[in-house]
Length: 471
Image (cartoon, rainbow, N blue to C red; front, side, top):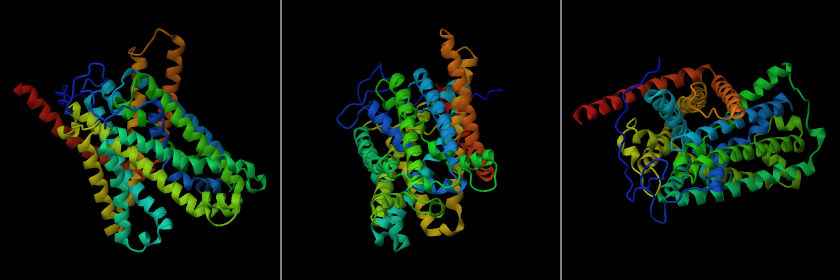
């Protein structure tokens, strides 16, 4: 039985400007020089930048203990991620509005499912932003040793890393897009240097065994996949911001697939190159595999500085994109009356209240980490996001299966229908695999976070009911 609340009264559009009937959200057209819709290149950069954060700089060492068979796990995951990207593209053609998984889940299963998707995604965004900022401080400490000398200096640096992208967001979508393009170019230059240039220095003798350890081939692939599973979180980035993309029915799907494939190429070639540049026995214990790879290519010890710069730029770019996404889903839910009305306030194309509240929560978590970080609460919260990030994926792919099975999708082309059904089932299986890879503790604690949101939903549904009765 589907749990529905009566459709709440939509929140009024808070933008100032003329009404644009062609806008996919039916809101006001964004006026002024600071608000700009994203084209295909910027939307693609948003996807690639959000998928590739700072984790790539440790991935080769993380999977090295399993042997080169981990590349097989990467290939399987890449296929699943591309299937998920294609499903998001098809869903965006049908529902080209800001909100992504929230919009799809609500259209298929009603307000409650939509709220769970929005609530879960919002938790993921602000906790992940805090985690990214804390990780970025570690690399800043390599470039500026004084940053890492005191807890208070590390805390201030982490806060600055969060609020600088927030300032770019508050300045308008024009600046969000510009920062995303620059960050993507700057961080991909050194990554491609290793991923492509490293192939010219490739030494097969460094690869080590195909399957290290005593586990079976299937066990090794599964174990490596458990580490790599969350490398592709962010494929939904263009879909979540569909309302800010020009011609979203066409460009969201393209940007999602192009961004996912681009990230996959960097992941696979980068990992393969590092495997061939750094001896296996050294790579297993490496804490900076890309640094070791650069040093192996050119000699010297300057690789650490190059990689640290690339990592900081990578994380700033990811924070820039995730800050926008963290506000877009609550914005979409607030327009439908499922989040507090202030979250529907937009200025210069950006949901300003959502940005400020999200960054404030992430900042509070960051301060807590550096003040009371010994209790492990911060680590637990980050672990929870590995589950909450996948809930919207499950709901979105289930929505696509519902549209196909209920006849609400296009049945004119039988070949397309079969293709979409296969892709939706593969994407649902991939999403379920992501949930399983979260681990028992993350699923248990993540469910508690979801249930806490039920109280918020109850309050918002009651307010909507009172408005309808008084109308």
